Length: 418
Ligand code: SF4
Image 1: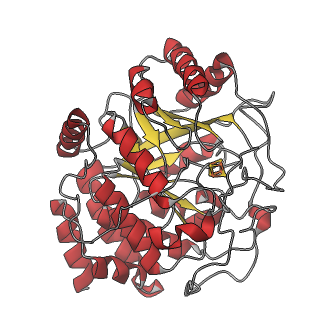
Image 2 (image 1 turned 90 degrees about the horizontal axis):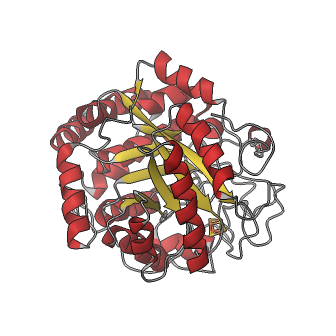
Image 3 (image 1 turned 45 degrees about the vertical axis):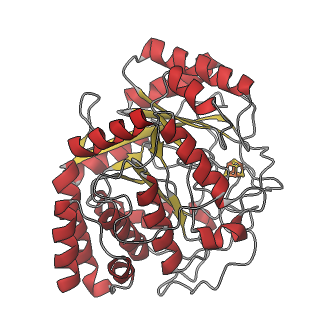
């Protein structure tokens, strides 16, 4: 297939495809699916070998958010029966983080619901990072607190944070249909603030909210243009009690095509299968490892994942290795560019990328957070979905039985799943 030969050749050179080529990946048929996975797998192995980076979510503050992101179980007015609690104490968060690291996680992701942190919240997270580093000096820490104000990214960097997560989630054109309390431009601004302060930018998307193929391609090119070092790909978890509870638009095949498109556009960037992996990829999860080089271990922010040991077994059975603490995640040339951009105080780590093929509009305004399960992967569109073509092979069936609210780990007396 000419398309896949072209995409493979470009990916092996670290080049970004055209927008038309990215759209064509999403339009491939089920008969072509294994060829698509194999082509994306060649690109994945070129830059990341057979390593799988494990990330572990700690929900520092759950629920009760004043924002209205319609995909999110923690949103204003959510009826989802999730855990609700205010800030964990540093030692509580460190205990949860330690369980994740013991389970094989290289990065801990500290997430709190809310529009954005106060300066007091930055102090709390500073204390929490110190408690985590007391036990695990080498662990990578990514922080996800929503929209940042001036100097907050610099304070987090000075306190030892390695990365900041803030997802764009969907295209600029559809952002207003999923959230009314902040804008796409607000989100872009926070990613740029984090990057400018020298934090590695983690920013991704949520698929399955009724968006079109064009929306998916728009947001993925926008992430490339922003220079995101890691791209979490969330598949909407349609929580009962949120506006998107009925949005079961994804099939395992569709998820694999989306992952492949993200990989081709971000050949040398960390691509992470984030929230919704178990719910939507289901028994096809191991195929996803041939495309993505990173996953979350265990549970998400407000929903449960499969057992951490099952994640580890899956990685081993599929012939991959858990990335060790001493191994670099990004290829050297990407790390060099990221460091240079951070030193210069600007964004744009995308080595060969920044801008390449598509005119991704990384313009303007938004606020949020969004790592693995919560501030990103849990929700859907509040208002009517844009003209969103129903995915060609959407599940007709609502599978609410697959969504399991988290009842263990952070904020409970039960041991974390790691
Ligand atoms: S995604 Fe983040 S900002 Fe939006 S409702 Fe959820 S917790 Fe609040």
